[in-house]
Image 1 (spheres, rainbow, N blue to C red):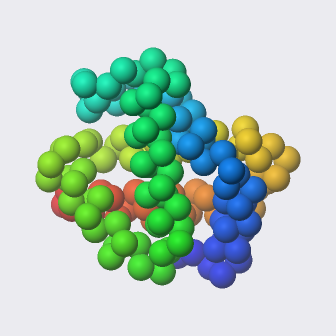
Image 2 (cartoon, rainbow, N blue to C red):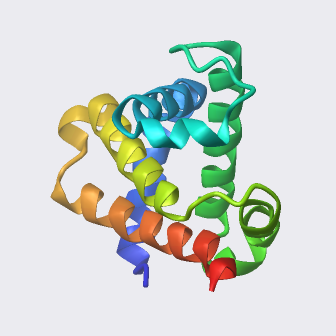
Image 3 (tube, rainbow, N blue to C red):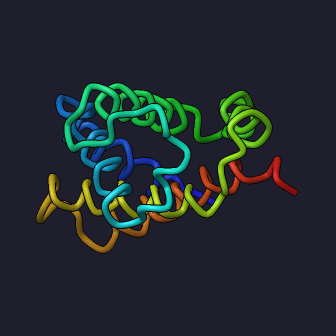
Length: 141
């Protein structure tokens, strides 16, 4: 469960990258496809080259969903219900991919936040992303 301090840390670190959110989404997806190439199977109609319009567009959606989750951290189940249903029932994405993407998001945040991505920030993001993953994967049970 996220503490008040976790929420403060998350919001504070998110504000530091607010002006480059689309870039973060694009970089996270590019990293996902490079490090976990099996994830590409869910995007057969995409141009998966780094920085492509498809990756930029989908990265923007991912980051928007993450921001919405962050703003609704107290009500993740409700705020992410539609996204959870979409991935479980329509897209049928293997839930392990949520973990892969979360790792990529953390790496990208760390590269942009640099010294500000300390142990406390890492732990807060890790806890938050684990909560998001849990909600996204709950429909698979």
